[in-house]
Length: 393
Image (spheres, helix red, strand yellow):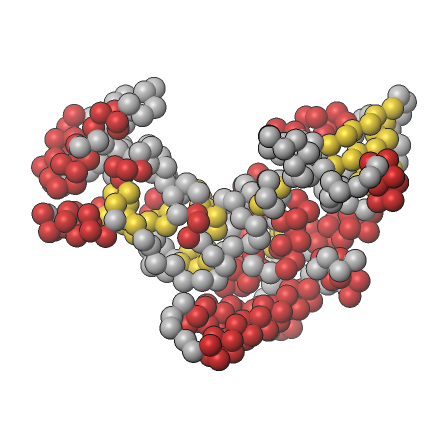
């Protein structure tokens, strides 16, 4: 409830109460047989206090919880808590977060709202195919290639690394192949007949799964769209998948952003930002963005984060003043470093000698550190603030 969108009304109510103490166990396995995120919330009668005590419990290995709380408590400024989400941090860290937010514009604004989630098939066994099936379908009918798209899963997205899709998607929009006819408002027999005529091999392949496909989401299948169509195909943005873009998984342990210029489609476990912006990619993979992950995003069991749009679109992106040569230079340096990281990671994916691999890995680490240094400069962070970002104090 501290960070999730559904907790917003509770957070707003609690800000009007006299909070005495919050002991947060995060994702620790307090109850071994269940995944829970427990905390102890103590509220007193009377008007709200300016500050309350908070503790982030880091381990369950303590002899007495009361002693642990006394030893690890810190003060949180209640008035400074944001209804968008509560990072339970001390006032120094809270001030740093405000400074970072003030230095940039929200990511959603920076990319003109263009952050999209991937394709939901409704039945992967029908729509997601391997290389052998792709070859068979194209051999049976060369036109099949028109609707077979390289398809990435969230687990395949790794920071700066090149991607090569292991599977393919049969991209079949609602009312395909008449999907651009705006006069069609529901499942269309005419569209199905045209599909069968134009793409016989694909139609025959999907027909094997007709019963299962017809039983998806019965409120829509066969009513809003045809049995053979994808459940959610990105009706207003599917052309963005063909463009160069940034891709990231919906659940990750750290920032995992890649650049894709190979027209890959993605499953619903990914998000895409259809921009060719290496400067943005450098920030998104930086230590500063990882700090924002830790402070703002909901944390899941096992140390994972969920960069859902309700939070992530508010992350502050430092814009560059086109009249400021120093800022332009910093942006250009980040772009050059990202280009080198993409090149080196592509090389690391190949066969290398141990010495060459070690050299490239060291060069990647140095490029990462240099990007971090430039990002800190752009956000105007002092040495002590950098130490907070990097978890050193």
